[in-house]
Image 1 (cartoon, rainbow, N blue to C red):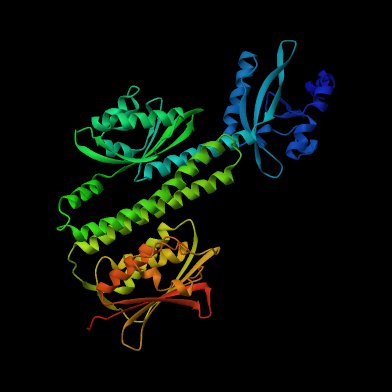
Image 2: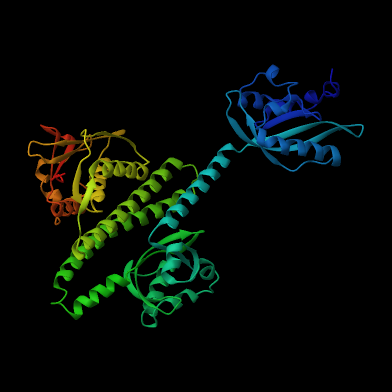
Length: 500
């Protein structure tokens, strides 16, 4: 019979042991379990024989053992109640629960012979804290990688700034976070300062009608003048209203507009292009930013609930997808500008090498989806006349096949062959949602932007068509299954082959 049994602790605290809905465990000073209450047995799935007289180290996560033994040494040395500690305790099925434990020494004749540990399960709280931390880290990761400046303004103080905003303003994040209330307005041109301050104050106080999108002139740290495009939304930050601001450096855009005004005849062609790019930018980018702002607002509300990880994860995935769409849009507009602006020189290109490089690039970029890309090569190395934009052609087609695909596994087959006309023929065959017959010609047109049935691919494929025209190449699209467009598409490209 142990000292513990002799002292009749279980009988002395019988009612506590049997009725408590909290964790109760008694262990000896050499680390063996002397007794547990029914709550522990039921909660962790053990029988008394599987626990009693067993070393408690068998049930504690190895990473927490050091703290457990430290607590025992503290009780031995001081004879006082140890501070609460959190340990991961193993269930019979192998899963660990977070238990916050408070140790009380048991003494007899001035000698400590055991410790009674009481505690409660904080697993849900710990998991919620971890999910919140991951959500915050995900937001910061997205914000820091964004090419849009992001600022949170509250009480005329900058509460958060990403690196892109620091780059636009010329100040460091550390400098901006140290500014006094209202000091941030020094980066605004004096002639625009009153309007911007008025709008910011209204948003932070939640008063009156406000403008969520406008331009103003900014002054960088080095004194250089710039144009800023401002998108904003009122949010709750640390339980108070705040202004979430998205900043785009619009200097080049504004300068281009000014040059067009100064010489309409000289820049007529550039003016037409600018209008197209501007209209497309305002329409699609506003949708993207609005989706981002709505997601952030919803996220602000959901974070308080802590236990909605799956829903929060979906929101962040939505943000990431919209940001990627915005990046694609900016990239394609840039490509169009380069195609119109510069004289291009073609060179001999090994088509198989370019396709392999593109496949690897897309797989690295689209890691979030399960993708199978098969490549059936013609049995000879084939060269065509092309330039650096050829990889954009293949990338656009493959990424469209991935994005417009609702299957669990995206399947793409790429084939190269020599057709009956002696041309190189490349086929991209996918199992995606397909393209309706009425849209098969329109998707290659630059004006295709009104119908969003095939969302977001108009500009990309018009870019593809424009590049291919320069190579004297052709492109068309068919159904993968001839009579059913919904079973996937087959994009076919033909190129003249370099004579060797």
